[in-house]
Picture 1 (spheres, one colour):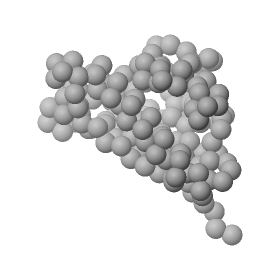
Picture 2: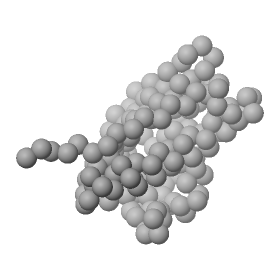
Picture 3: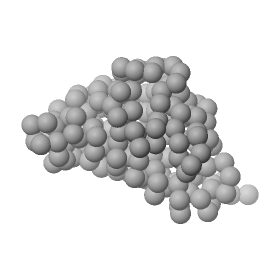
Picture 4: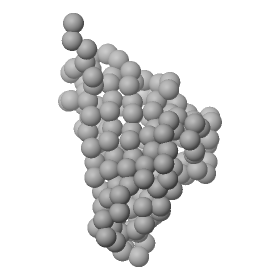
Length: 159
């Protein structure tokens, strides 16, 4: 029997700011909530405001696909300002891992998000057709908010 590993995608965003700025914003519960207003996302347990750190967790509650979902994520690796990893420890996915990387390229920071997910049911069908495109849009939306917050000197636009 072949074991399915899920789906992985990468989103790359370039911003005119220091890596530390994007790193800190990416760990901000408040910035995340700002970026997920459309899904009425709330932090309901664990670290619910401010900055989350290594070993800490947050429980999110949000509406996606017309259903309320609850997911607890934990910061499982952190190396400031190079990157960190958050992973689902309880929630709707069989696997959810989000790796955040920040690299300086001249006066620009390259922010790379690599998301690996695996859904519990009907994943072979649901992941590529529905879940992956939906999650890619969520990450792009989140990153657009981070860009606006990180790069006011460049008009809040990606580089």
